[in-house]
Amino acid sequence: MFNFFSPTNIFLALSKVQKFINSIFFPILIVSLVFALILSPADHIQGDAMRIMYVHVPSAWLGLACFSAITVLSISAFIFKIKNFFYINKSLAPIGLFFTFLAIVTGSLWGEPTWGTWWVWDARLTSMMVLMFFYIIYILCFKLIKKEQLLLKISSLIAILGAINLPIIKYSVDWWTTLHQPASIKFGVSNSIHSSMMLPLLSMLLVLLLYGALIFLMKYKTEIIRIKKKNIKRL
Image 1 (spheres, rainbow, N blue to C red):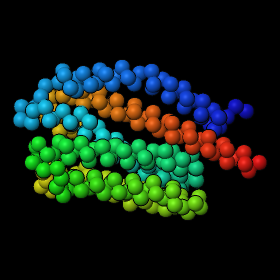
Image 2 (image 1 turned 180 degrees about the vertical axis):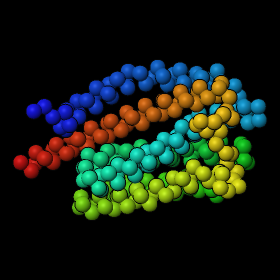
Image 3 (image 1 turned 180 degrees about the horizontal axis):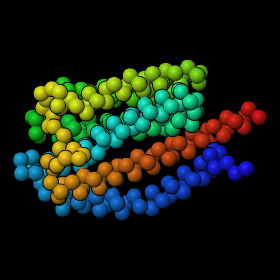
């Protein structure tokens, strides 16, 4: 019987997806950069420094999204013993760490001209820093723990504990008085960001999403190869 979910078939399917993303990535990147750097207007208060938003905001969204996905997959892998989710998380965590780090760095670059300082222990910034440490701890688990069952339990626990921080990041600007501005984009209600800035923001989100997808596909394909080699050695 044809098994679509066999490692070989998954590898072939991922290769096709990767090839497609490669074919559209650079045209979308160029168009997005033109919108973000040239066609979109400068902010009437912050000037061109506001353009950092086009990298900072999507990076923060993706950093949160990756950890949310890791949490859901960790719980599912622990309950239903689906090892494939375990390998997906292993490939996804470094990407989430990258986007979280990028969000912190670009936030600092944006904060210096607007706040007059590179860093403050603001609720939003601090909670994002906590998220970055959770990513680091999660990744270190895969490096340091060799027993698979123990790794599954500890990594799932770390993911669940780290997920507690996600709503803190999201609502910190509403719960506390912070230097970080409130959310400009709220689904289901009117947004405070103009459409001339929304388009390049969403296009840059697509660029970073495609970039993250490419890195994930390469890392996950590497995991599939490693699993196949491991299975061959057992034969």
